[in-house]
Image 1 (cartoon, rainbow, N blue to C red):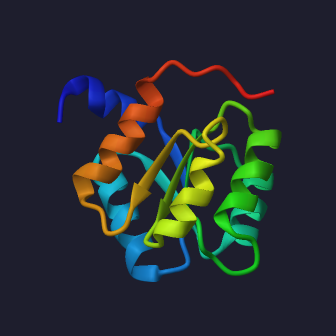
Image 2: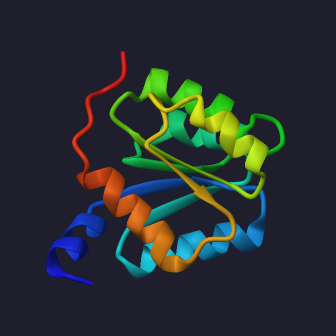
Length: 135
């Protein structure tokens, strides 16, 4: 990990919406090891509640979740927080295809299972890529 990466992650606030506790803990550990502040949400509704009370730089969301799925969460989050970067994760190929239809809203889609390096690389990439806010 470079000094630039340490600086990049140290100031970062990330919301992780994932209904599988093991996957959520894996993502949390991976990003905290890089220095990010990570907040977990068990589903899309809890993520919306967290977004209403705190600001985040990045949203990492599973696509398939109870109550509010990741796609509905991404649509709402993008409208309300246009500068927040969104990374979607899914183990279901058909759901990843649905998310690809949201290319203008979603900054990156990752297939499960993924490695510690893949999730940290995705966060690093969305933060360093030039991106205009969505209208």
